Image 1: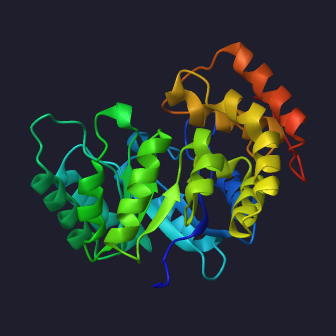
Image 2: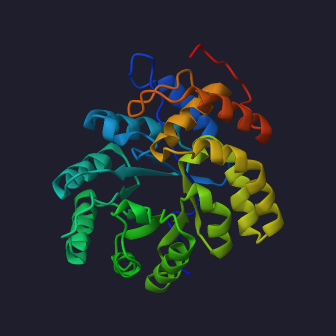
Image 3: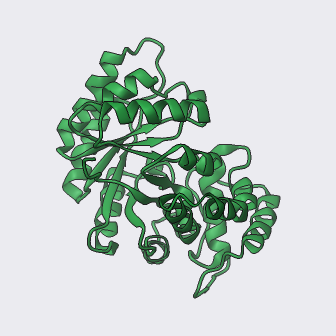
Length: 312
């Protein structure tokens, strides 16, 4: 098999802010140290949904890439998300991310359009690849979003020379397995990275080349254990990790789902990893979220080695 550029655990980082709304660089440095430390953390993914890319200025996105680069271990890859409304915007973001020091770009789908053809999707992805001049990963959105790719289109995209990975978030096991098989047939250099928090155990049981998740910002060591067990084909150990994480996963990914990353920030604040749980995209969480998350963290036995928590 051709060596894969991405595999193992890729941490999709959340981005801490100060109470005034500015990026908290000191808090982000602690988060990087906490989340990127396990040996199987092979890459750090910034400027995606977890990092609230849509709420950042172009200058902030570039600053995040440059700051993250300085915090990585030798050999760890820096992956930058390209979240755009148009191809023109995506092309510009790709150029900026490349100039700032990204190793790999991840192209998010354009907003749903009932008239967009497969040929137009292929042209969009190729334009992003050409603009960035870097290896490119694809984000397969949940089937219910209206923006996911068909299995046939994913296989076509996987054949493009620039594509090195698919962040597979279809949110259904049957489609995940179809896509896993189709992508592997299309190319042996494209990593399939499960990213559906609800399905990690099942996805890895079917097959996967790694994990890519915002949850790794919160429980990097546990996902490290899950991935290592998967590599050993140790289903008993995989089930044990999944069982330990189950209450926390349900607390973090409760409805409404778009609040998931704000809940991860809340959990990281409760642990003392970051000093403020502010989100630019979710202004307020229900009060019982904090109670459920704290209980789930305690039940899972998750703690931060050096908790220094400021007031909320």
